[in-house]
Image (tube, rainbow, N blue to C red; front, side, top):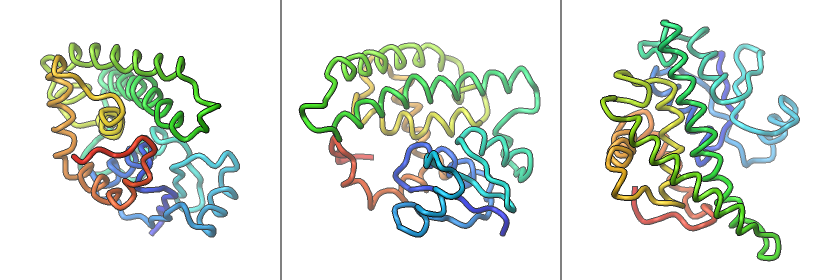
Length: 217
């Protein structure tokens, strides 16, 4: 087995890569973070200590979307997550950046603020993050019109990014009823076997969610 993934099941960015791995049935060694030995291994590989990190036959690959692209190049499977057509690939990459920057990032801002001491909290920043999520939901609801998945008719890396982004964002800033397409898309992602598996693997860690995980999903 050449693939070794340093990840934690409850991490949104790790779920992004896990979804890609499960889509294509790529065998890999799961190095679960949160244990002293694996955490030390991660730091030796990537001193920044951000995850997930993939090791492929001695080569270290960082950043979730780069890992997904790496898998497509070196370990392709039946589901092509980055389209061969460069124009279609551009749309996938655009949507990937949208979910990371305008859904995942503000969601994490809200979550991390809960971890801080009361005196260190940033109510203005949290308000801005909630406002960004409202704008993101509105834009996405329009963009999804006529689309089967985030970037078109086929499941792609954009959906790997969307799944954990919308999953956790709805926990901290619920997707309103006005955004029926987004709500339906989120449920569709949860029903996708690859992401459903990632969600199930993370269930034992829900009590760690700083704002408190809702009793659903």
